[in-house]
Length: 217
Image (cartoon, rainbow, N blue to C red; front, side, top):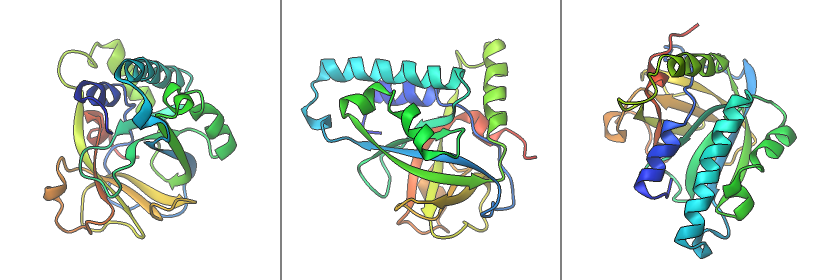
């Protein structure tokens, strides 16, 4: 995401952990969620630094509220390497209904202010993404989400087909997205570490370190 460095870190820290690594690629079957791509909005360039600070504080609080309400399962910012400079981050919302997802997303102060625009797609995966929220809450109770860094880098691949031969944390089919027909998050901290994948749809992405630790079902 094109944020001040500390704000990018804050967004990743509050991201909700996703489903753990599994060896077999997800197919088009599975539970449907709504994937939201947050992209640079139409008013971003005109917003001054003080207003941006206020927007991002509200953005972070809204992420927490959506998670507390069991609506937001995963969030995280893109890094510098990405197929489109406009990409800022993602939400994965626990609803297959785009209209519902739109209503939830439009509560975000960044979307309201035009700092972000939102693109919606259906993500269908066999990964049990709900388990990630439960694990995050357990970690919070133990005080494990403070102190030591709780985030790390991953590689996200947006493509037309599954990514073979790479350890996958979660993946699934995308419906209704111009960015690809398949999404995979790979257990690699740097794009250079996955030379086997096509570069056109590859992005660096950040989320909590438990993305790689939650066992498959």
